[in-house]
Image (cartoon, rainbow, N blue to C red; front, side, top):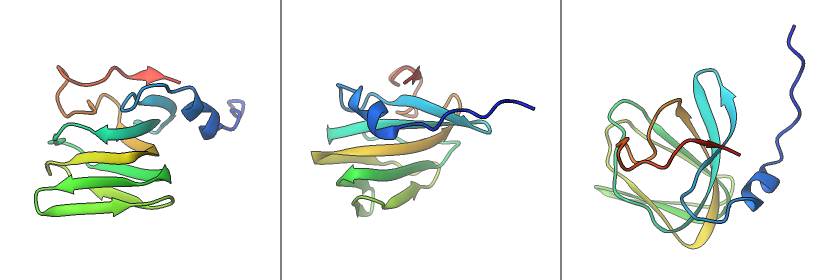
Length: 120
């Protein structure tokens, strides 16, 4: 039997992130990466043709622009963008996020423009 891991301090992991939209992997769950990121300003319009995109706001406010409108999220609110739907997350004043995606999923939907997958 494998030893139990230590709890993950999300606040400490987020405090170590200096740049917005620079996600850091904090755990692996089945074949998914669990990561945290800070949002400020606008991210790029993008889609994920093969996977849904899960956003959980830990702190601050996040807006996810969609082709047919926008979804506003506050602390403790979660939204799943269905696969293939173009979207753009943005935050005027900043937000802290927890996201879950399958391993290898580029954060922009395009491996050429995606941020590298970095462990926190």
